Length: 340
View (cartoon, helix red, strand yellow):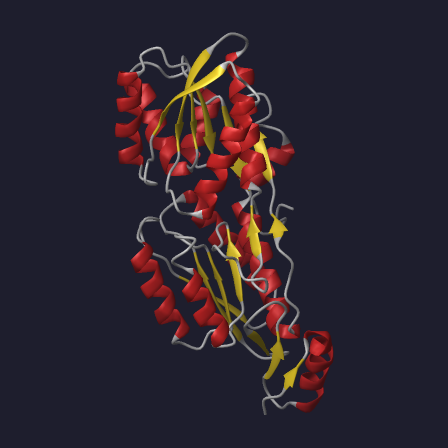
């Protein structure tokens, strides 16, 4: 039996399901377009799709998602992804294939803000609710929440960290973004440049993308160093870029001499902070991102209520605070005690 209800009656629909055993009900979602097929009981299969597999950040997202599922009854996570964050077509094809299967909810990070809009609409048209993690779309549907870092605010702070590390006087700095056209990249670019505007003694002399690839980032950093032998600092906006840039500084003998503010917290990045190669890291909470998004999706499917978007938080890690218990809980999350 399939019955349509307003969002305000979602809870009543869930109760009806529990008592009638009629199966799924279709409940109108909030915002424009799309509905939620409520399954108040029985097994659920959720697809969770990162921008790419093979990176520590996304592995932590997966761990959080699977941890959340393990704490609930009858919830299965189907994890899959492309191997490069730049493979937009591959992600679209993967997600289209997922939607042809029986999935009850879709949690995914968009590799391209504009291209993935249609994919989200396709999911909603099939009554499959969607939550974006890390990166949403443009436009972002009102009934599709985003569980992500406040990238603009965090990147503003990255500029402050770079200014503090360099101290007074005029300094030349570089910026290595990672994938123009993605929401996260563009937000971090906006935030960092807004932050730089507060520090007129920092002059941005180079900006070049790493394409989310460590090898490309190494080459890009070497080129920047060659063109700017008097460079004082670098901000690198994601994990693969930081790994490549750090390797370049090590190979050119400039590690520790050029201040590097990085993003994320892969093991090599954490080692860089400990050794002094990396001055500070802007550390997201990917475990929480996966955990909270899956928890919210299960609630949506079970009740029809769409969760609000969530800022999943950020920490700023330096040699001084890296051993603090709160920082360690984010760097080494455990399912027994998920970081909040």
